[in-house]
Image (cartoon, rainbow, N blue to C red):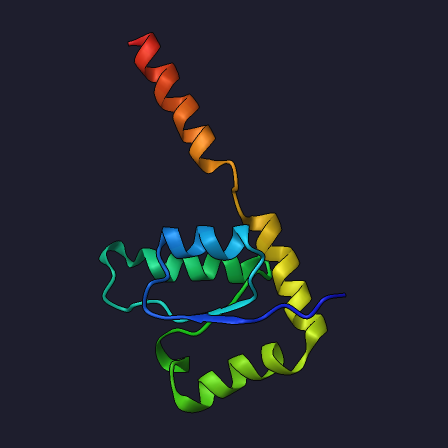
Length: 111
């Protein structure tokens, strides 16, 4: 197994960041911006965490101790990094642009 470099992202845990992390199989610890419109960053982080594709650090856990607790296993275990990276790849949608284009073309031709 290869040891992948972990990434910590804050506060830009929006769709673009998520797409890049999953496409590149980057293990990550996400700290969503608490004031994001519609709480989409928190939603994105939790969705990825549920499938094992990241570690989400939110609200009450967003402390120095919480950060240490979240980051330590990612930094110290190549196996853990590889697990997160594999799940990130599975969770990602590398063909999202093509899929969206197809939907838009379909709608445009049916309209």
